[in-house]
Image (cartoon, rainbow, N blue to C red):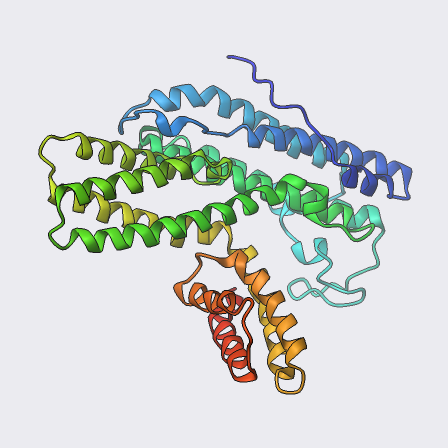
Length: 409
């Protein structure tokens, strides 16, 4: 079996500072090892990377890709299982005889400090006792180790299913989702452990944690613009356009898609979606090059492309950015509520609050047509003399558009 050397493990300055702030030397030593081992696990998980695979021609019902990836995945699972074993070995706790699996995940309430000292557990009836930092960290580590172990075992079972091994684009999508999920768990574990000793933020400990969100926001903006353009072109194709017009449409959308594919942030999309973008370019090129342009086929290709882009917006990007969108929308909603409260007596302050809300809403471009329309109203006010009535209308429009996003769970 080939040996896989994962990328060098790096520890941020904020992460080192948080570990060094642990007052107990013995506990600091253990947490330091856990952080280093987690860094190796993160490097292994992040090696699930399908950059440039979108250019490959892969057929369904074929084991070519799986045969290529299987040794790599075996090495990744080995590293992740080693992290779980190390974590449990570092933070051992005495458990009553019984099923070890059940013991690992038995008491999340206690692990996450959901019970205050003296409060009875809702299931066992036992009163919560005061715990030392070591006991708190141990419970947290065991709880996260249980989650990690279950996720790793579940993924290993999925990868033994012939139907998945042979569906090569689905296989890559499944592995990308596993990567994102397992990375999130590892980030959360370290942040929870260090949070016992002081205020920490995942994004500060792991600067890369925010990378996919920022790339997703950038890609969403570009896809939203491309969706608008494609929709307008589909409407043109429903008429009786000339061959030159159809070729111009195909060329324009092809070039815009090419620019999208060149963005560094495009790697935040799943490889199967990047492949679909490339497929559209190939189809558009074939249609343009044909001596006799097939307008019906062009309309079919453009319509299908528009449907695909909309699905990327409403499925992949919405799921990936959901937590970000809710947080941003809630902040914008708060600013808008304050602006509405002072708009009559202090329009200048209301305008400042509205401008702040607008900056937050700019990160939500492409989430909904209603929000984009309200944001355009705000942008149109730039440099214009605005009366209280107009200001109130824009605040109301933005607040109504942002409320459904802020209310999502």
